[in-house]
Length: 298
Image (cartoon, rainbow, N blue to C red; front, side):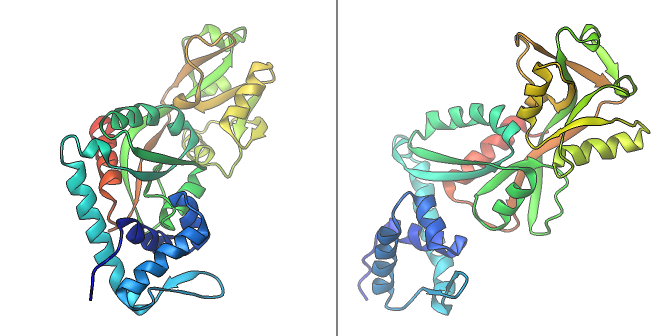
């Protein structure tokens, strides 16, 4: 048998294999579905057998495709890993890393890490899925993202969590609010205040309310929003004050809003990496993942 295929043929096959969808695979690879189909047809012609079959609900591997996937992944990974390890050549290596990231983490420390990685591998593209905690976990579990940056405490049995940083909850209020004059607050100080909070479906709300219940602190949220950024708009208008993760608050020079530490005791959320258990990352994704751990590991 004559071996005649392109590495992009393997990438096309593995994308459909992992995502179970021609549409999602084509979107992830940045190509049209007809172009994706042509690559798969060329690969199947080289192998001499069908690798994928359509069902009524999704696309799945044939028995030969199931056996072929580990080989294709190993060939692709070893080639890319060798390129990334060669000075000068690694800088020319192209590819894509897909991350499922909670929005507050995407805003704060992720850009710094990407900037550092980009200096070494400028042709590696990033696709950032800024999703809620629950949606981000599902995206990683389904293989739509290489790995995720999320909150601790996930209950998915097929996912592993590596902590990176602790992010404390703080008070965000207008500069002319009475509490803005105090440099340190207790949770009891917030009882009776008009509070803005994220919905009960949010992972942040679950962490906060569990900790407050243990402290016997009872807070009433007059406003509920789906996104942390929306709560800042209500705070700016003077409609209330908000309890937010530090990463979600404006910088110190904001003209209207200030943040204040809340202690006795502080309540924090832990942000870290979420990965599919026993899954093997592409060389580029593995190197970026290792960079995050080296830079921010608790």
